[in-house]
Length: 140
Image (tube, rainbow, N blue to C red):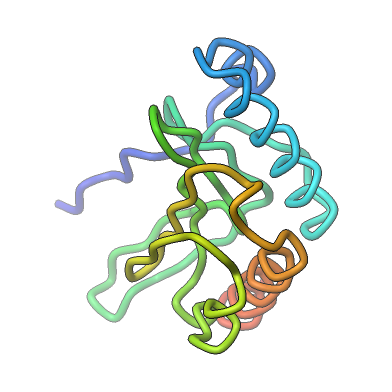
């Protein structure tokens, strides 16, 4: 029996989640990311699980048969840094090199604060990620 996704869309308040973060700078950066991702997806923010702010939804099915839903664009304000979730297709090395101070893994971008990066470059990366996800997983 397949295991269900742990991270699914909830009815929790995005504003209440952001407002309870202990660092004002993280709350401010989160609000900037909300505006940016809302603009790029045309979707309202929703909580996915207890700590991810996501925009829009796409459905996927892996070759193994596992399927589920995930947000088109998402981020999480963690204790010490922002985690921005990007599809692998959007992690273009040349573009990432222009971003500024960050670290990246397979599907995540880690940023201490938005002041450390070029928001135009971040916007381009998120836009690429959303476009690639929509292309790979078209709505039915």
